[in-house]
Image (cartoon, rainbow, N blue to C red; front, side, top):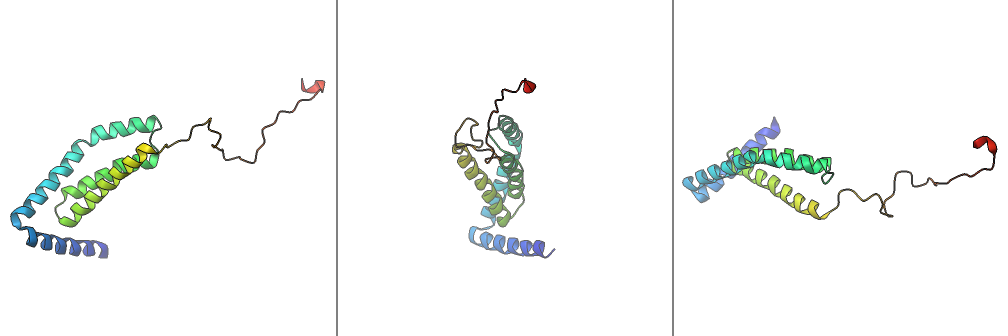
Length: 139
């Protein structure tokens, strides 16, 4: 409860400060514009979800990346829809962190190839050997 009141206090102070500098009409335009951006993200979420499921299925995306792209994108869109300057800043930061994560993940391989000699399994101390015996009981 104390965190919510602290958030609400910061939201009101920041919104009043920005509104006093921008003016009432520009503040209204900022609230409406950020809400439209959030709604646009929600409308495109279905196509984004299908794309992310296909990338997860093709193993080009891990579970953590899938979580970040979908749930955090929804959370950022909801923050953009809510009126207030602090929620808009949080929503934009969430969306930009997803964008930066997408750019970094494009150039970084998620799963090392299995035939790579630098790839090691969990049992690095196991020696693979074949035992050949002349004993007729083993044949």
